[in-house]
Image (cartoon, rainbow, N blue to C red; front, side, top):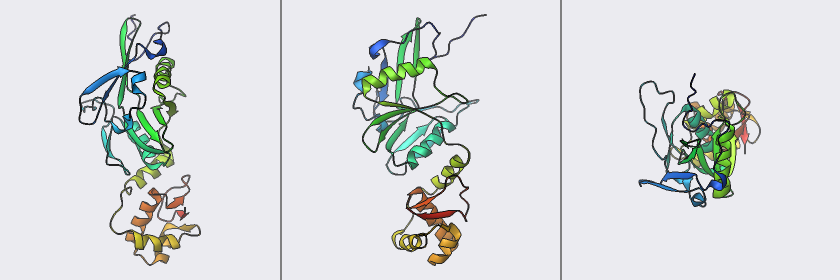
Length: 252
């Protein structure tokens, strides 16, 4: 029986190019053509501001759902090629530890075992302290990437000055809470005056609906504003609890 080796996979005896000299990186600047460079040529490049090398294309039978995600804090739309990428984009958009990110902005190509390989890491992000990270989703049910992909990525990361982070997308209750809050990630109307009144009522932990009532705002307007303030982290709550209208929140 013959064994098919998928694009980007290696057999056990295949060797990863050393020092990144045989690894080629493809990237595309915004509204520009695709460029190629060595792994070292990626150092200092703001890939988190670029789009995907090639946008995912919908087709019959495609497993991943394509999502165009407008980022809350930047004039940027991140193109996610799967629901797993979209869920991680929610986390990156919500967490202040990351200030910019893009999905699949670089494609890595190399030869091994007489075959050409290619692979796109899931995200490149810039942290609040100015570091650049490449984030890759762990395969479902696994604790790590396949060893060869991880080794290729580490070779590139050393040459480019990146940090490598293997992550899981938010799931369960945290994923549901983030998905709900994401619908309130953009400001709406004049929030300053009403926001101050609402914050006053949450100086002590208070249920959302009770706090809105104490602020004098009508329930629909007040809850809408409270959810926006939760996304902005002006209000905090326990992510281990469902984000219901009576969930307890407090000022940051």
